[in-house]
Amino acid sequence: MPLCSFYAAASVPVSKPQPSNPSSKPPAAAAVSAATTVPSRSTTSLSTAAAALSLHLPELPSHVKDKILSLELMGVDYRRALSLNPSLRDAAPESIHAVVTFLQSRGLHFKDLGRVFGMCPSVLTASVRADLRPVFAFLSDDLGVPESAHRRVVVKCPRLLACSVRDQLRPALIYLRRLGFRDTRALAMQDPILLVTSVERTMVPKLEFLAGLGMTRDEAVAMVLRCPPLLTFSVERNYTPKFEYLVSAMGGGVEDVKAFPQYFSFSLEKRIVPRHRAVVEAGVQMPLPDMLKATDEEFAEMLDKEHTTE
Image: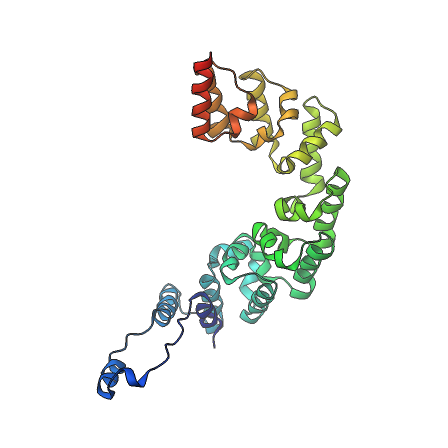
């Protein structure tokens, strides 16, 4: 069976056959029913999907077409994947199938593959033994993640599968432990992106920038432990414009972000500026956490309450 047909079958739910009951219909009626049977939805969907995907393909060797159809049935844009991973051009469909089979054996569902391969096409040509097995061993042995939770972690951060345990994942974990991250299982479950973030190029510079705002390194570390995504935010697109607005427009400063590091996780254009302007126009005072964390409904209620009180 071509792999594209295998994946088409895997992606379409198959209806269970209904048990026959000879006594429920006379033989003649049964014959008429059999002659007018409509193809099941699963069979129709399978053939329709395969045919539709084949229409836009040029005349290609069968193994190439099989590979392209297999990927598209998983929800992977072959052109984009190829542009990001040129090795995919020469990869055998069987090697891709080996990767798919291994990931499914580790708990991933077929519906997860489009996200995983779409975000990290390099995984399609990874070595199961040299690249993928070590990552799952790292999840279990270094981070203490139970096998039942491997899928959740990988789907949350597919880039884990594209990283070297020796060169990226373990050095990042060592650095994060030194900063004070003690619960490594919680780290993997909640903020796995930190494990795929470069220590030298990203995390260290972010910590230095925070300290440069006018706080000690220990105070910057305390902020990061309270709000781990701070280690991934852009200095140019996030820290600088938000801190400048806090100081120039809101009259705030370092003490505000030390007390409420989550400030940097809110959108400047969609949340910080509109909420601040609303507070100013209403002529009320509101703590920074209350102003930003509240839902739109809660924020409106707080404005009314503060305005009425004053």
